[in-house]
Length: 224
Image 1 (cartoon, helix red, strand yellow):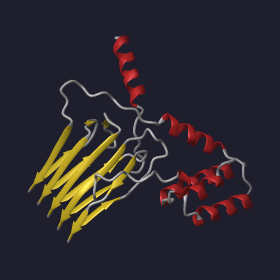
Image 2 (cartoon, helix red, strand yellow):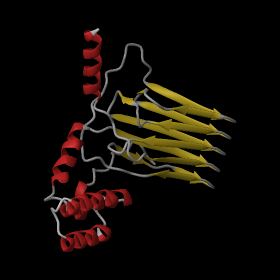
Image 3 (cartoon, helix red, strand yellow):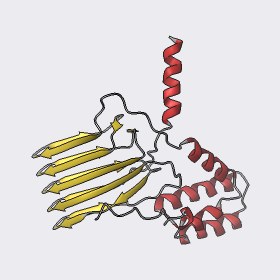
Image 4 (cartoon, helix red, strand yellow):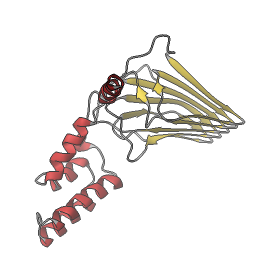
């Protein structure tokens, strides 16, 4: 992949392909609406049929557009909109993870820099960004796997792009486009030789509202 080329234009939210998790979410909302009496049995059956025939988000969302859950979901997405924590003085602009005949793991609550280099040679590297503090909107991960594995997990509400080469191995990036233009953009590049590189969202993990968290931390500190 030529990373000097401009990134592709974001896909419109309505055109994004629906996943099994998306269909399950809509079906659960419809079941609740049936239980609450907002839908009768015939309406529920008709909409459920539409859920499992839908191929895109644009076909799914109208099935719940007249239900309270649609407004609640939009509010939750707005509240989950990410913000970026400023870099601390002297913080490195990049990070290096190397697993040679062993394992390297970066997970939990950590400050993700603008660039991460991951190299796995007869070993493994795990990069978990689901609880990371993003300091920049754009994060590039350069992954190299030789007889090893690089496993990358990101939150669901970010944009994930990339691609690489697999030589007698696999290089898989599950591309995602966030509907929030301010969301983190994570690009993965590199290659796998007789190994694997995999990058995909981790179901149920979302970028936290960092400003709210920082404000709450300051409030607690001042209260002591």
